Amino acid sequence: MGTAVGAVLASIDELATGHRLIGIVGAPGAGKSTVAAALASRLDSAVVLPMDGFHLPQQRLVELGRRDRMGAPDTFDVDGFVRVLAALRAPAATVLAPTFDREREEPVPDAIAIRPDVQHVIVEGNYLLLGHSGWERVAPLLDVTVFIELERGIRQQRLIDRHVRFGKSLEDARGWALGTDERNAVLIEATASRADHVLRVD
Image 1 (cartoon, helix red, strand yellow):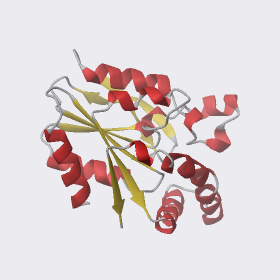
Image 2 (cartoon, rainbow, N blue to C red; image 1 turned 60 degrees about the vertical axis):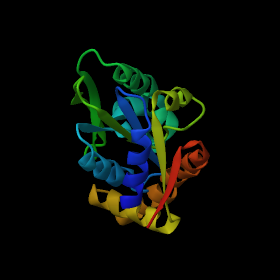
Image 3 (cartoon, rainbow, N blue to C red; image 1 turned 60 degrees about the horizontal axis):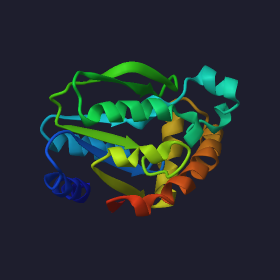
């Protein structure tokens, strides 16, 4: 993890003054949250903004017939995500953003308050580098991006453990991690070449 933080910090030093938006990208279970938290701890005045907060609510996913694909690109509020990132480019006031409650699997509106004087916003999520379906608007709003890679078997086991920890049976956890999550992972990993940095972690 030290290499990841060091590479990002080196890039930050080269950025223009003002708000710095740092994108941490990777497939489900790759360690994005860990890298983002480590980076935030080493930066002065930093806030982590997880893309997961922009999940569509469960009821809306059911209405759209997408509940069984939760986590796919079209199960997020990409327009809301872009609006928040655009507001953070040159903030004139505190920007409110949602977070995500993993136990309820629901977004929590306005749970993160990012003041205008915050120097670094670390944006972590799956689809920051996706080039279609509205997500192509995200990368141009970020100053630097780091793609996190992790050996597939380790990543999948982490996901299974996470799903069990938040209430799924082992059978359901395996089915989701190796099904829906893995289909999304293939799509996400194809975007790695668009990142400024690619980091392989153990």
